[in-house]
Image (tube, rainbow, N blue to C red; front, top):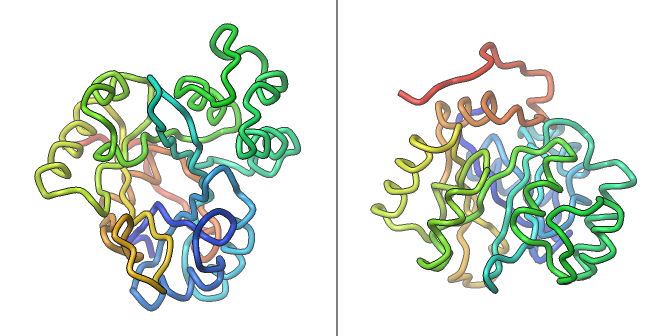
Length: 245
């Protein structure tokens, strides 16, 4: 349990090709025992994935990939939930508005997050604040895909972690982002950004490529406080916080 993890997977609840149960079966086939389905602006696959995970022996971490903007660039923010706040009516209402590019209406529910922003996309700061309101540890998704002009400013924002291991990262890029996480954040994540195994997909990878090992997973689970569903739901970590060494 918690020996090989892929914390960035998409299902049919957003733009993935496989159902939550099919993802669980593929993860099991690829000897990945811990996953997070992080659909774009949707959490509707989490419960089905948790049920299948319990059935087939896979731990499931509830997550979401939120669409935000910074300096005109699309920036994705991953949220890993510490409790079931994502099931609340308010969260469901807000995430649906964000998905439908109605951030103005979403702001009316949340309250003013960053001044009088009339843009129909959440800013990165708004995205961080929104996810934290609903009990999520907040992670900058695939920083390797972010422009050089915006990356330094984004890495200075109050994220809990960054996605250091990513399917399109070179060895040098992975090393850089892991070192950045060691210096600035309490954990890092990693994932395939899996969308499909049915056609050639040059933008994303297959489940388990790359993955977090057992030590990396333990650090993530403890330092993020992320909720574990599925087969690992009864497991409790023994430490409050694990520093980097």
